[in-house]
Length: 235
Image (cartoon, rainbow, N blue to C red; front, side, top):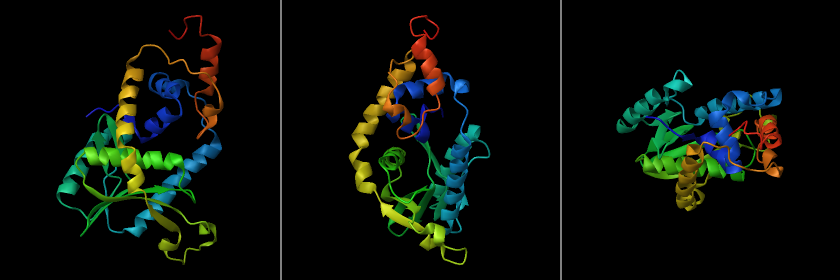
């Protein structure tokens, strides 16, 4: 089961289609990852694992290696058929998009999805991320009763290890916002297929979008490309 996009590459494509194309075709020419971003990634991973305590006793469906996502997708299917109460990192593929949700929970009301963010608020990027996951889950046949983003409370830094984990997190349903993006997501994925099937790098001028919502890791290569655009080097 091959896939074209993931959560991160979808968000990347919303920021810049050229960045997506470079990621898929010139991956090894990315700019070095700043140390502070590595720290943020590690923090996000740790916060995600901490949030598991909100729904303890679940089954971890994540693969042993990122290249073995198919095993995670198959295990997730088995766990859903068995109506496993809590699944951590369940994986799904639909419409050429692979996602790994933070938590999928089953109760008397049905399936509820949860995505964890290491921030104290919900940004537009987080909503786009959630909407994509809702789209994939729905397409994969998971009938969701709700989709929520779990984020840190504003006073989380003051909370000690003696406090309950519930005091660290705030849970906000975003299902209605996710549903509104369904048709837009389908169109965008189709556009991305067209972009990636092209043999030439998309012509996108560098501007403020190179740093919003994230600093692009192809600024060096993109600068080089713009300077040599007429030489045929990147044809």
